[in-house]
Length: 344
View 1 (cartoon, rainbow, N blue to C red):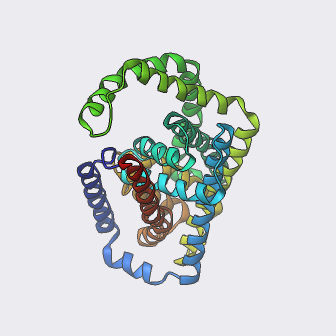
View 2 (cartoon, helix red, strand yellow):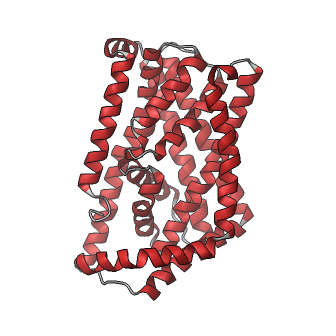
């Protein structure tokens, strides 16, 4: 685990994120932000955490559904635990899910006792499935905003949602249509990296190009199994949609806790747009997500920057910090189990 999560990279990422958060707090006004946080109702904040638990559980169920299709079933409690560990990996590595998926696959392969490429295919499939409901949720929100004459307040958000709705299916289709060609390119690119790591890390052997290509091919085959199972895809999309809705509810409740009754359409748009900021070169999008959410909420919800920032802070404690802390413990436990077996 330590070879995958470079401590210096993670530390640099968090320093950058803290700088962004500090700048955001300065722009909003630290005293006004603290004053808004002081008005938060504790009972509603607890409800925000409850909505976050529903979100994690729903997405864990989506992952569990995919794993079952790949003949690697795991109990629900373990699925929730391992998905929390995957969230930890996403939240401490740059570029969010893109950077955390290799570590997440290690955790899943450990928990489900399956091959690494199968685990990687499962988390990649689950993450891909999550894109569909997010775009649909944002489109619904945009429609209601325009019907209520609020859409004109944030034309760039509308353009971003429509752009995502057009670009994501196109890119997905092109990637899937050329998956075998992409697999060959990835295999050729990964081989020298894998051999270099294998030659330097104790207890690891440098893999041959044939072995690397076989694993890449196994990953593609696992993706094909999931793609061919419509029942699995529909169930996973349903769980994913529930998770996205729970995130939106958590943001609405966070706003309500500081005295803001925002239109539901606002949070339906804000949450997916905030998630897009998760691909920034910051750990889990920390800083970028907060700034995006505040930028969306101020004009659309008609609130002050301090109130928006306070609500976002509460929301992110439940959605980012709590899963990161709990998931760190899960990742450490699974990593310790792997190390014990290596020592045998």
